Image (tube, rainbow, N blue to C red; front, side):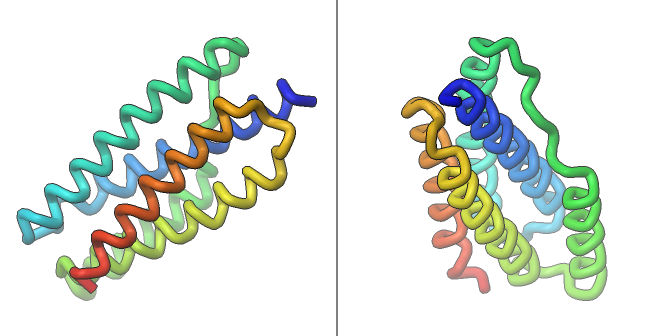
Length: 144
């Protein structure tokens, strides 16, 4: 049970990290504020660093990880495209990213509870990812 929950939790982190990186990449070209760009690039770097940690752990279990849900990713890109087409502003980008961070924190918190038998290393990685998302959400509030 420990191994199964560990792999499942790591897979969800993998998908969440990929979704976060993709979302940041989708909005970077729309950002006007240098400070906001710097916040998002820094967060993307943290996501990428954590992605390597997750991959190392998944490699231990000979698991390939998980891509984000195609429907969720598609809907996110559609929502981003529509909102930015209507109002291409830093405020719009901040709102989209805060919503995404909130959903990520909610999902990851649920997975921590669902996969309670996971090993401590995978739980720590999940908590790091939650913290990265919460920190970005907090930092972006000044742009709302």
